[in-house]
Image (cartoon, rainbow, N blue to C red; front, top):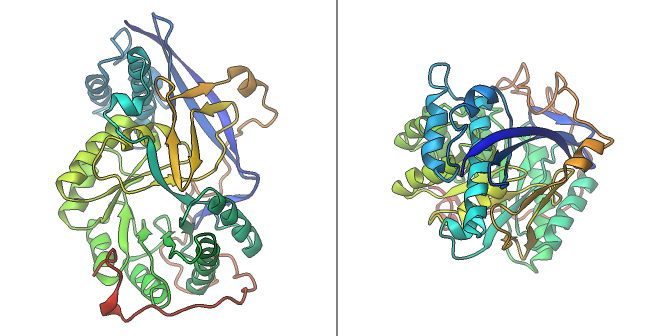
Length: 409
């Protein structure tokens, strides 16, 4: 069996509402999605969702090879990029090709990838993540009511621009999930996408924790700031989660060595092999892992096979236009199907006929770091003004020496 070629496609994720984070918002909710399809001489093709930057140079590492040799082909792709480096979208291209190869390997075996990788349980615990910073209060409540109907009892909100606004929005979602869970205490997380300095992070989270219990604070400072992440972790009760933008084990090692990360995250776009290797590194340090991404299907399959998976991000409940996935969501978990491989189907005709085509990304949005990021010291100066607050009960937490068992001391 040999790899004979590849194809690339572009589709979109249509959210039907604004999506974004502290760095910016896509007002129309239309987010571009890139797809790579790897073909073989036996008519079996594999799918990877991710970019295809410099794909001709990277594909040369696997062209004509047996696709079942996935992990060694992954290293060949890394070696083909080592001079300029494999960070950013280049690493994403490697990840997309890697995911497609795992898809082929499992199809050849006639098994779903989760079974091939040694998974026992097809259920993958999930949390809701609405990319919701651009929503009004009513829109926020409606969004998480939908998640709650699928059994989601933990939620990660986007924030970081205003302490009281974040507190208000977290309390709104807490009320939704508490009601849906019939009083069961929900899990809450806050993601600020590297918007703060170290001092801002500690001050902001410390104030939130006067009335809220956060499971984790995500990317409170820059992704590579091991000392800063460790300082934040010492100053707050919440765990520190980070890693979705780290590309390669070499970027995790300094953070783990510094005690700077409590929840190790990996983005779906970086591929299955990266997830498996990073999970092993984290497990060696007794750290849990959590996949990130809107279409994390490859990492969901892989998560069933690692001992330290905690929970996976569930963003939109619908796949991108022209993409189908053999999984469903129920009782707060992704439930993987039995289709061989990833269970991902691509309707190329529908993608080509789609009326909404992904255009060039604008100069503003969550993909662009704002000029004043890390210097937004005054509430409301750089971020959106807080909407009129709903009146909801806010119960104080116990004293700081009586925190919940999962909280960080």
